[in-house]
Image (tube, rainbow, N blue to C red):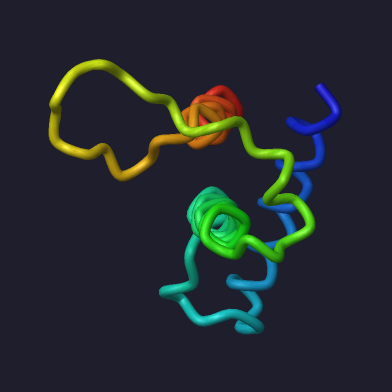
Length: 88
């Protein structure tokens, strides 16, 4: 509930800033910014073994099948996307 209220307030601030000319008209909406920041943070955590949060990632999922490699082997990637979709 708190996240929904916070998101609504941030959207309102961004819309007002855009309306009054403080932001360009092609400025991305809040969801786009949050999604791109989530992706960027997760990519940094995943590929930088020195990142503080890297050790908290679950181990990559291993299957016995010889399939094409999936770009996101960690189950946590899917959790980020599902959580973001529930906020809408």
